Image 1 (spheres, helix red, strand yellow):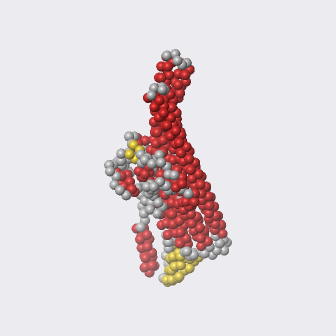
Image 2 (cartoon, one colour):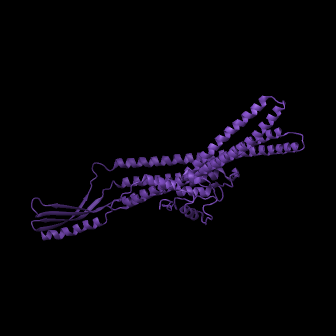
Image 3 (tube, helix red, strand yellow):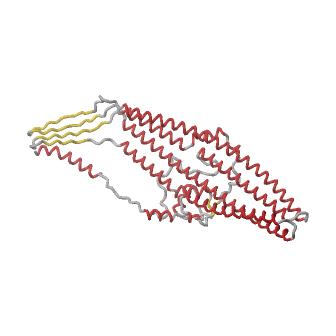
Length: 472
C-alpha cells in the first residue's frame, strides 16, 4: 500500500491547494431604517457632491454650496444622488463578473475508484479538458459585447436623469413665473373692482358691471391658489428628479440665464440632426452592442458542434502491480449536432437586428418631428412677442393720456389686464419652445446649447461615485 499512497498524496495536495482559494460568504442584509435615514440626510451641501461637481466641471466651486443652482449643477447633483445611476453601475459590475466567468478555463477532473472489497485494486484517472473551435474566445466576445451594452445603458440612464432634471427645472421656473403673473394681474383686478365700486356708488354704472369685475377677480384668485399648488408640486418633482428629499430644496435659489433665448431653429439642419441621431444616440449604440452579443452567441453555438476533448494520465494498482495509461475521451455527435441551440441563437440574432432597425427608424422619425415642433414653437413665440410689443405701445399711449387728463385709471387697468393675459400667453409659448428644444436634445442625446456638457460617456463612465453624506 505504500506504493499506492505514493501516487495518491500528490492528488490530495491538489485538493488542499484548491481549498485554500475558496471564497467565503459574507451576509449583506438591507437595513430599511438605515437606508431611509441616509436618503433623508441628503442635501446639496454634501462635501462629496462638491468633489463630484469640481471633478466634472474642472474648476473649484466657491462658496459652497452655490448661491444658486443652474441646470448644469443640478444635473450633476442628480448624477451624484439619483439611485437609478447606482442600479446601472451595479449592472456594469455584473457584466464585468460575466467576463470573468466567460474567460474561465474548465478545471481538470480526478476520479478515484478503490477496490471492493479488498484494498488491492485502485484506479486513478486525471483528465484535462481541452475546449475546441475557439469556444472560450466566442464566450469572451459575447461577454464583452454585453459589458459594452451595459456601459451604454449607464450613459443612457445618465442622460435620462439629465433630461428629467431639465424638464423638472423648466416646469418649476415656468410655474414660478406664472405665479408672479397671476399675482400682478390680481392686483390690477383688485384696483379695477375698487374703481368700479366708486363709480357704482356715484350711480354712474349698474351693479352688474361691478359683479362681473368681482367674478373675474375671484377667478383670478382661484387661479393664483392653483398656481401656488403647482409651484409646490413642481418643486417636489425637481427634488425627485435630483434624488433628494423635498426639504433639501427649501431656501434654494435656481438660475437659468438663457431660458428666454432658445437657440434659433436655423442653427440646426435636418441633415445634421439626423446624423447626430444615428451616430450619437446611446440606445442605438447599446442595441448595436446587443446585436454583437447575439452574433457572438451564434458563433459559440456553431463552435459547439465540435466536441471538446479530455486528455490525461491514468493509474491502476492491482495485486501489487502498477499500470500507467494515457486516456483520451470526447463526445461523439451522433444523435444531434447542436441544431436546436444554433437555430435559437440565429433567431435571437435576427431579433436583435430587427430591434436595432426599428429603434433606428423611430429615432430618425422622432428627431425629424422634434425639429419640426421646435421650429413651429419658435415661430409662435415670435408672433406672441410681436403682439407684446404692440401692447407695450398701447400701454405707453394710455399712460400718456392719463398724465394729460384725457383718460382715466379704469382704461389703464383694462389694458394692463390684457397685458398680463398676453404675458401668460407669451410664457406658454416660451415654455413650449423650451420643451420642444429639450425634445430635440433628447432626440440626439446630447446638449445643443453652447457651454453645456454631458459628463458621463460609455467610455469614461465611473463605476463608483464618491461616498454620499450619511453613507460613509
